[in-house]
Amino acid sequence: MKYTLETDFSKHVKSDELHRVYLLYGSQTYLVSMYEKMLIKKALSGEFNEFNLHRFEGADFSMQDLYDAVEQLPFMAQARCVTVDIDPDKLDSGALKEFCSVISDPPATTTVIVTIKTGQPPLKKEKLSALVKTCDKAGGVIELGARRSADLLRFLRSRASKNGCELSSDEASYLVERCADDMQLLSQELDKVCAYKGTGTITKEEIDAVVSVVMQARVFDLSKAIFRGNFQKAMELVDQLLYMREPVPRILAVLSGSFVDLYRGFCARQAGVSPAQAAVDLGYAKNREFVLKNAMTDSAEYSAIQIGQMLETLIQADARLKSTGASDRVILEQVITQLFLITGKVR
Image 1 (tube, rainbow, N blue to C red):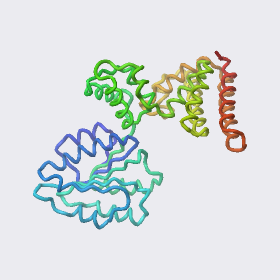
Image 2 (tube, rainbow, N blue to C red; image 1 turned 90 degrees about the vertical axis):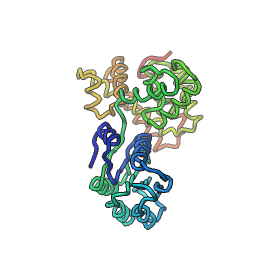
Image 3 (cartoon, one colour; image 1 turned 45 degrees about the horizontal axis):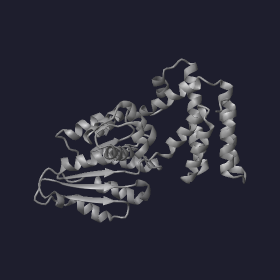
């Protein structure tokens, strides 16, 4: 059975129903791990659980050992549980076929939980499809991706409250901007902020003092500095990114994404489409709507010709990085200077 909504799967996990096989995967490894723990607890409700839980990780385990673990009877309990953390891409077609055969029909006393914690679906879709097909037929499958923005903010505020702190929606959104939407990273960074704060209401200054900003957030700050005409701030951010040994092609790729967002925001604003609808039409994740909303606001200050020139400048810089022997840093600083000249806002 495929669960298309996390809410439906959550209800199932809290119910008395228990499938014999589960497949948990998706971009949110935090949720994969969370539901894995909940299912283990649900499957092993009796005593001697340490004897009835068998874990396998990676691709180096023996299929015979896995078969034996799945088929083994519970020890002085009603049930046993076998968890397998696997990356299907690391299994050849023969091994994957054998794996699917082993987990396809476990005994009624065994619950098998298969997880993929790579953070993204496997590149080889045929392998994922084979695994999904097997687990769908034998039990339950759920892909755990990005949560809606409102749900993500509720998660952060609830976690802060459990740590004895208060987190407003604005500060929660700011934390998401700093760390992107990775719930594993967000939970770790929020725990650090709460430990630093102790008790009380968390401020942006305290988030800045503790949180390890992901590269995408620094490049996002770089694009904002360009949009606001702050040349000095932009060059400081370039220094920070290069000091962190971030590759210039990667910096340029993320920066280009911000200007593509600007172009999309411009088009959506011209068409009179709301940010929420534009985010759906353009394929933005539900918790990334704020990116397009900001882009629509920023795009109001530029003409279509200016935005076109910005995108062309970035394309030319990318070509120079790939085809010339010029210094990557020089190319990056030049493209940023050219973008400032196009915006006509330098202070």
